[in-house]
Length: 222
Image 1 (tube, rainbow, N blue to C red):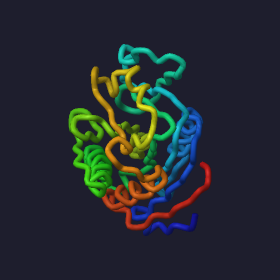
Image 2 (cartoon, rainbow, N blue to C red):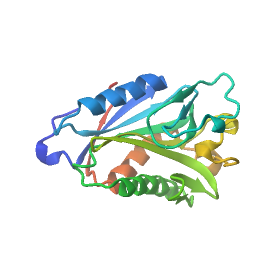
Image 3 (cartoon, rainbow, N blue to C red):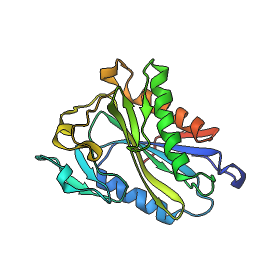
Image 4 (cartoon, rainbow, N blue to C red):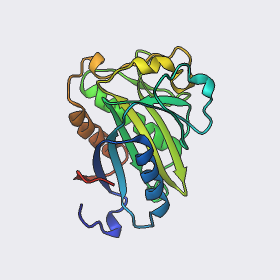
């Protein structure tokens, strides 16, 4: 994926396209990447889809998992409550050294939300963030969820954008801990682009909002 000089570390972002992978395997890889990274490790974004799974954040309450059925529920180490991942959803993991970028947590969250808002605006969709309930909403329906873990000034986990998926499992939980919260997806908003196209466009939006002028695209696994 190329050699990055020390001078370029705050401006270069490597994009890995991982396909459909088991949630726990990728989570463990994110943890290992973050634990092993050093001062000159380039920042990365991992693009992935997961088989059906509910994930419950560090402060999550099982009371918000209403009827999981045969979908596994996995307690994990990000912030937030419960959410759902499944095929047709774009999951974007942000492995960033925010100390090196001199980027605050609130600033980071706002930039991530705004990148999704920018993407949707390109297709004529008006969306909003919510300071009290991080994520992106269209007419009160959640289209993107956000949850991060920060360890020694570095982030992992990230955001999920509903593209073209089965939304039924969201009815089995209180999404992000909010009873009755409705969700939506790009397909239902009239955006008919394939997931791969939206992934590319969202990464461009993220790079702009997070001030990474150089993107390095790769297909390799972690």
